Image (cartoon, rainbow, N blue to C red; front, side, top):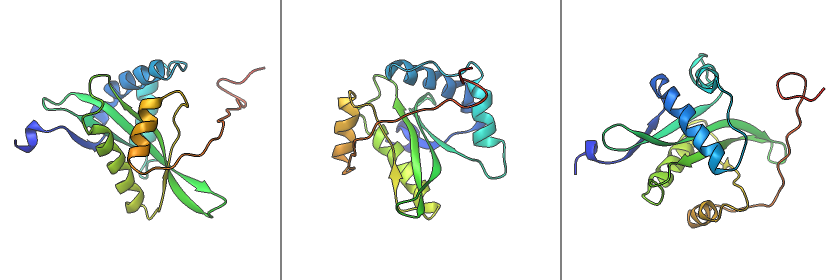
Length: 162
């Protein structure tokens, strides 16, 4: 099997933005969350490609034929307790029918490689407690879980209450 016949993970390109927005909407449905903003592709363009030093990074899982079927996004964050940065994997999603084929591990590997390239020693992420499949996957990779609740506080501007 040559490389053109194997699924692969690669950095996202600007031409992937419409597909990333579609996948993010599917991800939100899967996680029983509110849908992304209608202008998500434009927002992602600004964050991923709109600066000399992008704030976030994104990797896509592509199957033979070029269809993008999943993604992982990440951005540097700071840990006070460790007094160092780590890479926060914000999203990891594969479309139904493409899970269990090794693409999730390839996406995590790409995020881990990005962390190493940035001089970071850790990747952190979260998953809903009810997502047993994701928990089994992460446990099988040797990741460790810690129980916390995630809160969000709207502040002035979009999404804030008056």
